[in-house]
Length: 97
Image 1: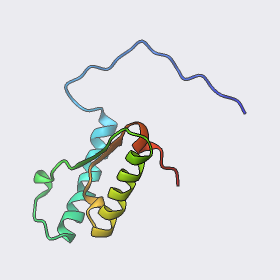
Image 2: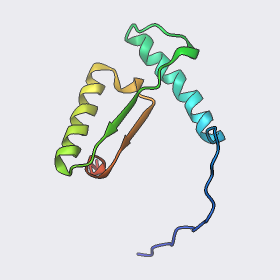
Image 3: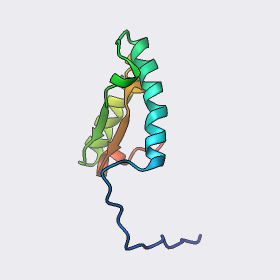
């Protein structure tokens, strides 16, 4: 097994706007979120799509189980497709399928 060294750069991007690729992703994702909200009978326009985020905390196995339980329930209720951002730290990111 070989491990490649990540590229090192001293550059930090400081901008008041999103990266072009992220803007494109967000634009496409908003369309999916809008369709999901309409399925849930939540009325909003393309310009009014809310920024819904789900964040998982650290804390080992409890955090992992907590976030996984939340994701499962959100999927069962049809709300998971309405999430624009999903992020986690430490334990909540441990789950591997």
